Amino acid sequence: MTQQSFDPNAIRIEDIFQAKRKWRMSMANLPFEEKIEVVKQLKQIPRVAERNEKLIFSAFLESFPELSRKLDEWDIVEDWYRKRGIDPPAEPFSNRPDIIAKTHFKKVIGIELKSWLNYEQIADARKKEKIQERVLKAFRDQPPNETKHVDIIVLYPNDARFSSQDADTFREQVLKLVYETDYVSSRLPSRQQRRSENVMKFDNYPLLAKYLKRVEIKFNTNRRHRHRWILGPSQGSHFSPDTMRQTLKAALLKYRDHEKYKDVKSRVGLDEVYLLVHYDFRAFAYNTPFAGPEYGFTEVARFAADVLSGNAGCFDRVFLFQFLMGQEKAYEVAPEFRAVSQL
Image 1 (spheres, helix red, strand yellow):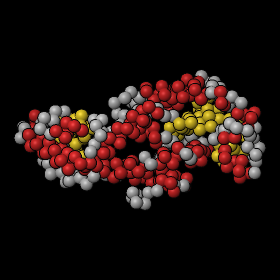
Image 2 (cartoon, rainbow, N blue to C red):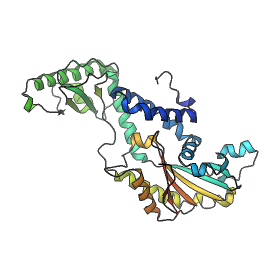
Image 3 (cartoon, helix red, strand yellow):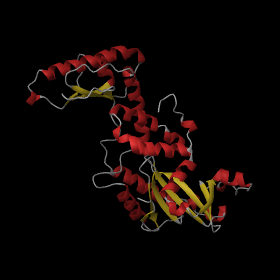
Image 4 (cartoon, helix red, strand yellow):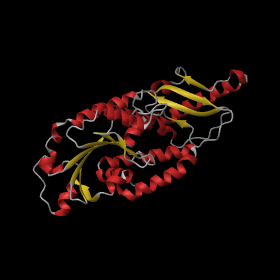
């Protein structure tokens, strides 16, 4: 997978499923640097999925064979009316819900898709990511690591707008700091050597003081030679998993009782209407993790069921779907709680 050959606008559903299988087989054995590149490219997939309800629902059906076997046909709402020559209902019900399906017994089902996202976190993370990308442009072509003990360094940018005119000098100052720190560390007795050092004062490095909060230098005398050893910080690692669980709680209660879904069955001509809340790669990349020790997607699905307490509100059934390649799982969380995936 190369940047030149990767076109997110040309992704087909079968491409995603094929990539999913390759991900399962190869991701665990990839070198660290290649994993970073794969993750960068995968971040483009949610931009397609945001506007592709068909992709999400196809993945959901693959995870929910019981429902898949019952359906004769289905489509996104716009295509449902257009392909069949049917006049849509009056606005605003002409585009609700997102998916319409028909079973073998001619029952018509509507499925409304909603993302489980913390939008404030996404906005903040994307802002930080843009700043980080500007700073790391100075190291687009990374020099070889010729230190004795340094394994990787992590640059933590502040909010200052990075000027490309400073790139060369900034790069020189970062490398000078790293090599000076490595020299001092290499002269210490082994029992005094540390695994990492955080540098937050940049008295002799004016551009580092201008653009960085701190530099974390990680040491390893038995290090592997990495192609990319100058990195930016990962997102969301210092937040409580409860943040996303509370985001899910608020979303479920909001959607369940929202006025816009109150009359959707009668106005659209549906026998049943489902709510499908999905956790996708945008949430994985930019939001606080919902999981913790001994707490995964099964536990968060139980949490969702407890929130709803069997009350699906405007919907007949509510589902929670983890839409991550190789980790797809689906649960019904109202009116009953049960796994619907073949786990």
